[in-house]
Length: 189
Image 1: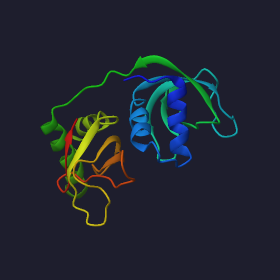
Image 2: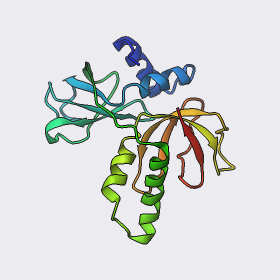
Image 3: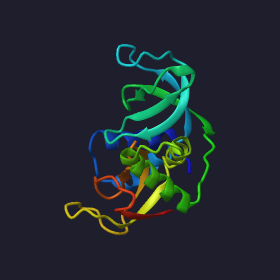
Image 4: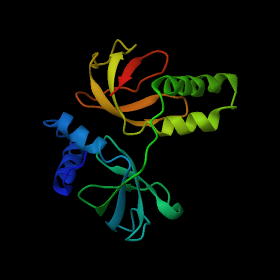
């Protein structure tokens, strides 16, 4: 799914400014950026030590609307700030691997259990599977959290998976919590 540059910037600025009037729409636009190729046109050098023309892949969009990028040539993981930095989309999207849902859940559970067991035998494969989830859409089936505003059927996109296998999600309807494999249930869209 591709959106115009103007629509993308408007959605990121809505997110940055806390404007929830179009939250679902803005989150869909933001989720579509993950894996897209970007080239930096301008950034404040005092804030981000990147040269104009630096290129990279979008990793996620943060809750404040900033865009995290995995820059080529070891520039690190500096972010782009909507309204302050300028960039251009290069049209390319990073090829993604879609692992079978059962393998994904197994990998997340192994990551979680390896923290206590110390078993690192499948760590590199599990990490690769977990990294492939960024940008995938999901629908909540069950969450084991009595204090959340999330409800079964809520949808969002995966921002990241941490070292404990916890899935960080940018929810369309509410600001929510992360999902814990083995405790919470979801389905991939």
